[in-house]
Length: 175
Image 1 (tube, rainbow, N blue to C red):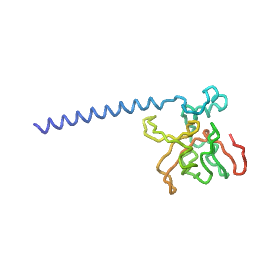
Image 2: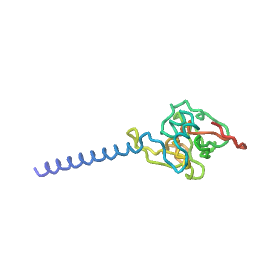
Image 3: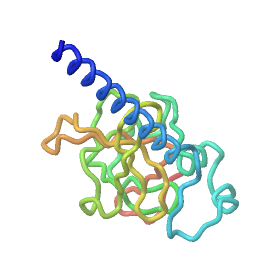
Image 4: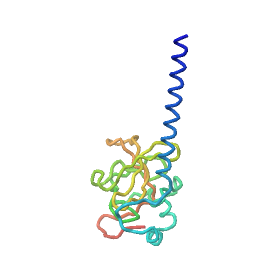
């Protein structure tokens, strides 16, 4: 009888704890809802809307995602630097890019060892992931995963709409 009561109490305690966890996750979802990114980069949302295409604004500022397999830089092979489409900061090199077959451009590392790409816990869409954003302007880039095939073991999965490209030997930045 005592074992039955103890077991029942344990089940109730675990049930209450799991409800508490669900509540906590729910509140985290609210913090990662589609609100414009806030950074020290001084540009109003109206200015962002003027400088970005509507699709870029949705991804960079509202944390949207482009459809897999559709991005301009998915199969891009030129040598150079992948830049933030929002502010022009160099984020990745072409040597860091690899084909992950996931539908988005993938990189195994970033320039400057993390100073240009910031990682943020993301609890949206019922998942626990790590979001990556431009450290300068806060623009949403995509997510990072620990399943990369190279020595770093990392896969920076990045929306093409978040990127521009600067060829080696030029100062011009593409889209």
